[in-house]
Image (cartoon, rainbow, N blue to C red; front, top):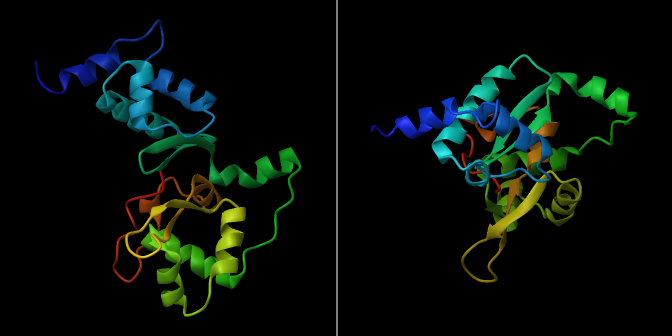
Amino acid sequence: MSAAEPVVSALLSPNGRLSLEARVEALLFVAEEPPTVLQLARALEVPPEAVEAALQALQERLQDRGLRLQRNGDRVQLVTAPEAAEDVRRFLGLATGPRLSTAALETLAIIAYRQPIPRAEIEAIRGVNCEGVLRTLLARGLIEEVGRGEGPGRPIRYGTTFLFLQQFGLSELSQLPPLDGEAPAAAGSS
């Protein structure tokens, strides 16, 4: 039995009449928080590799639909397509919120590309105190605390959130444009 056989078997062995892809989609639809691939695999009683294959198939199927699959690290969720944002906003009667300041956008970009990053490094790059801007970004749900650094005081390290990806129309951090020949941070907040 090859290593790929359990994955293929899980994809082809439907639970009832649903494919694994449809079962994954159903769990993502009802999940209150973005689950990890391992959580999905445990719930579906299949190998994580099978869930990854189902997620890939689901992502391809949703490409021209009103929903998208969005990943942040090992977590995954269903979101509306960025192209439908204005229609959704109008349908729900939502007003567009206040725009981010230049300082907030600069800080957010630093976090997106360098995450996880402590405040001291952000301030060293920007050259100014960022406490107020970080509070604003945290309050808007665009960044979150993703851990603590080593060293004196164990500084808080910041990373972007799923809301950041949604607001900027990204499915995952790897879609950030390259910065001076660098690849964007592969690790995201979990």
